[in-house]
Image (cartoon, rainbow, N blue to C red; front, side, top):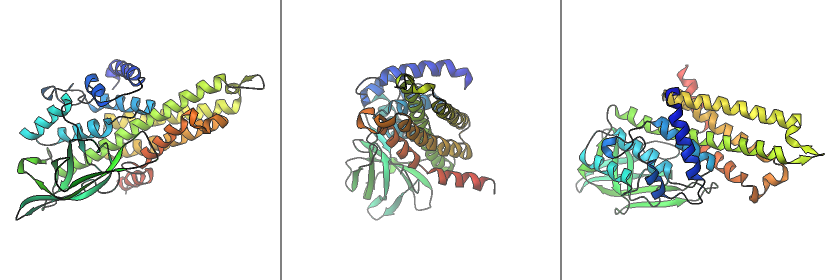
Length: 344
């Protein structure tokens, strides 16, 4: 990734300026070209890779931005890129990149990655199932449901948000910067051309989507952790006790130094997973980066003293986001179990 470091630095700089705005709505993300970053140029995208998407994910975490980028761009575009080329899927990808349609991948934040069942009845194809903790499902116009057909093969099913039998119920969570929902399908009618197969092995395709989600969250957590370190270093440089900045005290210096080392390790693991997104690398990045973000946010509150525990400081926003990231798409314990299984 070093050969693209200059491009990433420029992208990061633009993202920092853009996210400094009070409101970062969907049209702004479209006009910035972020939604179609890794969509093909044929579909109207930039033809970039997940490495560039990862830069945006980190900056969103650094700003604790309230956007629909995770579900509506990272996951939806990733899913549309993963299926076999087909007329309806290609048309939807172009519409998403252009900003004409909001689509979301109904990938549950925990549990079975393909929670829907596609069955053939005398009335035609019907889909049943439910997915919880789906990012940004509320407000989407199209929902991409990861399902298994009668033969147990993983497929992707395109369903309109207003289809009879489909309900999207918002789930309140402690983190106010994210919008999660439960998507339930009760016998939703499905057209033949709305069932899409993965390009290549179906299980590998489904697994790649869950790994993409976990890695995106790890990048977000990396941004959260970096923001907390920057804020803490800045605060301890101006907050004074006994006539000197508290940042000059040895205990505070050591705490900040330890935090920097921890974040550096997390960054290396995330970079390795981006460069080679295989299951073990993703699990290492997800487990370490998300735990790091929670620990760093907690340490930031401690080093801010009493002000760190007030609503005015804003630190609680980052702590809540870090805590939710830790749970989404596999807890650290679950990912470490997968790593251990690799060595058995």
